[in-house]
Image (cartoon, rainbow, N blue to C red):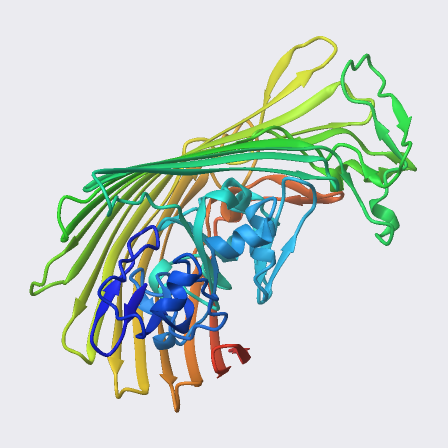
Length: 580
């Protein structure tokens, strides 16, 4: 926060405190910050009210700083894409139960839920594996992200997010495959260095209860900072009971009866619901942990290490549990096993003016992901189970070069590799005998990518900014089918795909209150293991079989946006987009 008059200026520290001794008692001190409305008052008034100044957060900030557009900090006023940001303070005010609930409040994002423990975001008609999820710069989309609705977004702890940025429209130039409908970039809490003493400790604890599903949540965040290094720990536990639906819901979601779980003796027991509005078997719980280390030995160099873990209990598939066949409940059991994501990343940031770059970021990551699903037909003692374990390695190199006060380049390289282990088995609940069955995907299959991108920003004048970019991506995937499982006319698959895509946009500010932008962008999505090699029953009567002849899909989009701000207190925004 900057405090200034015509003769003197100073700044607040990280606690929001500043010395005002050098200001005269009758000076009109101006308080200025990019996130707050400009404020002016006298020194005498500040002293009279206990040396406390209350500021109003600026609701309309056309010059807000965003990172997602080019992986570097940029003014939102210079970006032709439509980007919605959700700050930590906004998230705290919204108080969402999960990250799926958080993005659903942003406007323009629809979230589908088949059950508690779910939440599949949709942007401009695209969903699931056609929307890219990014956490701290690492892509979450993996080789088995399916085209049906996904629940992977709940692996991100809503209480540990520093800010969320949602890019609407294709974002493949910077992020590659899957960013057809848009990109959701989540930046988790960053350790804070001490600016007032040798060491500084801060923290917060939050708890929440919700009567709709008897939610019990406890969250804690603690930061320990020194002059050159800092550490942060953030953790959340949430427990959810069965959801109670409202009185105006659709009748097909009511629960007039349910299968009693546990103690199967050959015949499932059916119980009548005391309250059909209680969606029996939607309960689950979740644990999240985030740990970070930050080391900044100089103004030029910064090193960050991150460990992130998320784990759920079993998650019942409610939309399957209420399916009837011949006037009887079809399933005795249908649930997802624990969804487990463990992520480790290391990042080096270096700032030094040289021929090739002014800023450099090298980000490496490793993800271990586990998911499974289990189902059993009514009165059938055989429970089917399929489990997937993925190991994902990635590296991103991003560079920023300011050529002069009008020209700036963003460019970089990206590569990742997915190793997929998939297994299937049955369990006889009466005899406790287990047998191997065909897996959902070919075991030991692989999916990888290598890409390079270039983005160029040209300030044609103080009011007009032009942005253009292009990306080349090469992907490959391979795997083998077991001949004893299926008699396919092919033994496996070994596919290679390449794509070149680009974007061109312009931003015009006729005045400080107006912003007019236009953007032509393209995106692509390369087939993954789920597209090419999955075998499963998508719904009663339909079976999905492998197709090794799939090719990449593309999306092209023209977007026009007009924003009018009214004295920083309100704004009107018009956005039109046309798929081509």
